Length: 373
Image 1 (tube, helix red, strand yellow):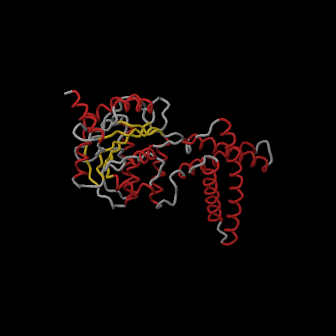
Image 2 (tube, helix red, strand yellow):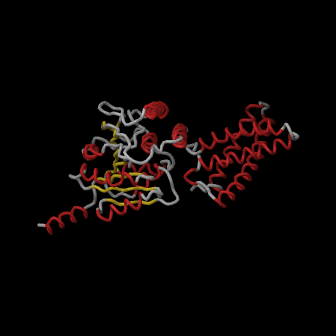
Image 3 (cartoon, one colour):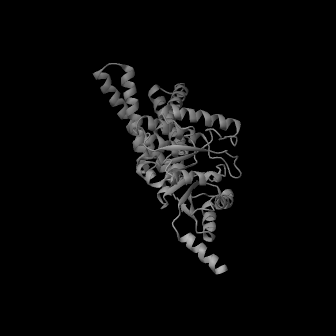
């Protein structure tokens, strides 16, 4: 009897899974055991696998996931070293799957794994290419949010629906299931940055994928800390701008430009202060250097948090950033002067120079300082 059960289990494990559940993680060790256990219960009637796409969590999430996988072959870990970001983790996890259907859910236990089977059945029945676990359609609930987070979520959802013309009730959901082959069509052009992979997929597909929603009750986090912070909000705005411009503007450029605007204010404050002791050209040089250093450190902590430079790498990056900024300043002056000579409108010439300078600084900094691929 025991031998037959072992053979039956081995045969089931050897079969390719019908569903891969991709869970992007960062510091979610406190939820891993419970998540695997809940999936075992919710998906007991189907062949499934759990792919933990972990961004090299310092709390040992990837070690724990591998430990769980050593006792349950349905659980495997995709450890991402030198890369950060929920969207990129989701994309890597989905592309590593061979199952015909893939679900994405968070590792914080706030998503209701009990509806995964219903989501899978709707994909298998051909009802849709994507099934969204929705907090906002009839029957859904977002009670797991705090008052402030709930208000932010509803505002962000309304903004996304308005600007991207995505008609579903919960385009910001991090809980969805998709036909893997359909996802792979759009994977090469999806953004690796940011936290809203579903919104990116829906906006990129432009109605070419059929979508249905399944209601569920969003639960409160059980362990660990929320990943929502200022950077997440800026990445969200960057994604919206990227989709609205058809990809002409990269998502990361938005926080970079906002930091640059802050740098302009810092420049003016330093200039005003320095003029009390120095001649204008000396005060301007001090203000320019101060603003560039401020921009570098804020970008290093915020815009490029996933690629943050430390130690000697940070010192080297700071020098290169300032050199790029100086070159960008020269380009700014040159372009503005050319525009003004052609059409003497000061505001147009000034804006053209500022845009060229900002684009130059962003492009070169991304490739030479923080080395985006």
